[in-house]
Image (cartoon, rainbow, N blue to C red; front, side):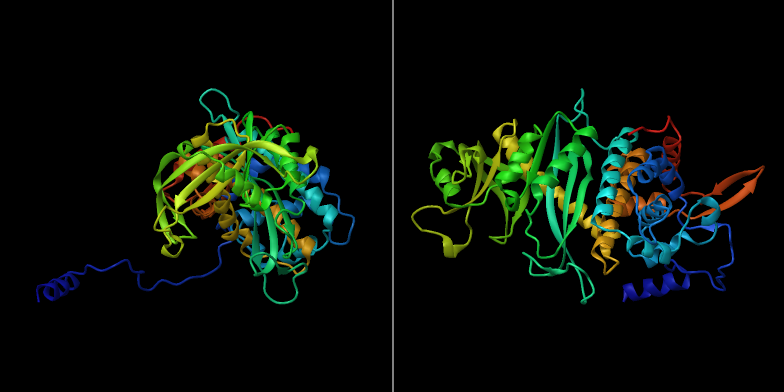
Length: 475
């Protein structure tokens, strides 16, 4: 009875939730407004990092619809930074005062025709732009650690693939791979360190039925080269899951004078090596946070770790065999059906590595490979929400543009504040990019009026100031 009385009393006093004022009407009639004023400093950053010059130098499309690649590629990237996830969404570049704030704005139909003019060779030209742009923009923003005093001594390159589901029959290359889901396969390599969020070093679109490790050795070599030139620490470690446990992949890593940390498949030689580990060699570890185990469908907070020397690929020629450390983590199997009443049954997870880190640190660092999944989720929550064309090469070009947009957004966040340096691209987009503004001209100068009391005003102003500092960045 008291609760009912209190509710009536509050209603009578006029205490209500947030409501719209009565009598509000809307009219789309202001030519001076823009909905994504944060694109201005972001595109300034891209220009300072030489994006337009790189496109003009490397992308040469000699096909109908492929003219002016500089204007069109930058427009695609700008639309993705602002939140476009399809070709039709590129229309957000053509509203209000966008034509006065930016030059070279192109419409969705023009950009769609441009994407369909790509072939595999032209996509590789765009790949060259993406890698060089990361190298340039890393000079302006603290994206990677150079391994100096007080900085991270190790940089990690994480490689993984994912299947982007497709629907209908119009998508070239769509097929069913290891997931059983019809779609296209995206191969991705990220670069990160203990204190730096990941950026994309390389990306490639493949047929949906492609094996995860198909062509991975060439892809890994490209990613390692880009990571080193972008300012990676002297110790560079490739992390990957068991799909990339191949001699060609490890050989590519060793040729680039990098280290590897790859999940080993539990085949017969690996199991024999695990059985050879002495009973007193196991070191107990306790996770700071419990780890979810898919096999046991339970949270695991304790385990044991040991290591042993191991020669992988012993069935191949001597030149292709690799000897390194096999670090093994074991946890008790909590499935009652697998338990033996006389002794504990364990499940094992093996990592094949030549990392210079001590055993426990190396095992913990390998578990950080999961960070690549965050980048995949970020892309699928943004430009990769759709593969917008039925043409395979068009979708490949779209994916490379998405990688450039991702790195550009991460660089903008790193320049804005320490919070935005670790935020998702969706958060950066909401707080720094999609800021409404009104464009005004006075004394031959354009002024962008932004909302008062914008919660992230300081970060936005810091980003704008940082993009104007210093000379252009050479490749």
